[in-house]
Image (tube, rainbow, N blue to C red):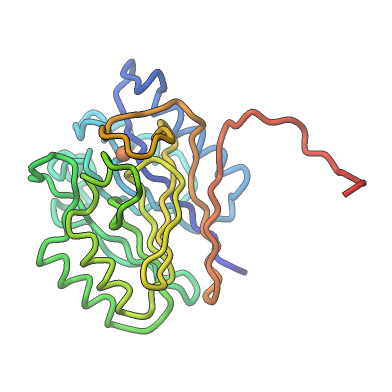
Length: 265
Ligand SMILES: [Fe+2]
């Protein structure tokens, strides 16, 4: 059976009473988890792709830990620009303050997940693959030739959202070149922008998934990186066929009517 893997990015967990553009990140995340358990309960793994919390505080990570203890999927935690290594490791002591990167195999496909958090970024939010992480990535790309999908919080290439592109992975082009040069990566998937986007670089697909909570308004060229809109939340669903992997985007809480059979079509 084709392995199914769930991807959720940009949870932005807050403490009770703190909302983002009128939305409660905790209830929005729970809605996505419940939706995934109901409709894709056979999924074998859940990757949380960074911006786990909104302010990177101990209290927010404690809330996340409680939520995760009551859901059915094995989880891998990644870090984004809103996360902080110290509080994260304090609440999740099975992790350290070291880079949160690694790989997991699903059938014949390897998922490689990167740590792009730069806590010392001059603009506070852009990402970085430093020399140590680049050398780790190069070794991972060379270790075998099985099909690979790469997950990273920050996007690597220009998206058209100018404000977000100012805070993308700062050496994203070099990283995208390195990945394409391996001739084994089928797809790179990111969060960070909070919008469903598809692009391509040297034969490798680059996709971005929405947040369970708030989204980027569809205003290309916007100068600010902090524009948000209360559109329905969502998550990614990967079908890991080794030859032809598929990424679905699942919207949750869309207004919908009954599913009907259209005999005329
Ligand atoms: Fe985010």
